Length: 171
Image 1 (cartoon, rainbow, N blue to C red):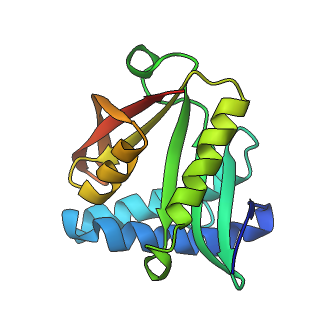
Image 2 (image 1 turned 180 degrees about the vertical axis):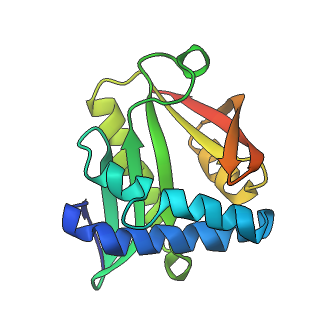
């Protein structure tokens, strides 16, 4: 049975390992080994951004846990995208990841419900996110909720720059 709860600092190592593996599974094919190593070194591990954000109360994490294993998570963050594109008072869905073994089990939908409910409860007028232009599955998922493409974002993967779609949902 999947348990949904807010993340705690002690979840850090398991959350970090799960997120790193999802990133590798999803994007490894799109970059060189050197660029992959550069990206992973900054994003994950003891000094990585994910664990720094977990310790920062400005970021909120919701976990899906199955028998002690982190099966998925969502991270809501203060806006770091251009407010001229998405609106100054928008909140940002920075990540919504589900581990391969749990994909198709409804976890992404449950996490998205939390994201939408939380953003609305906070009075945010809009929700923004980025998604890699070649991640068709994720793009279709967000479009089903009404997100629309409003701009582009240059996502740095090591030395490589990829095009992410900026998507926005009016709440």
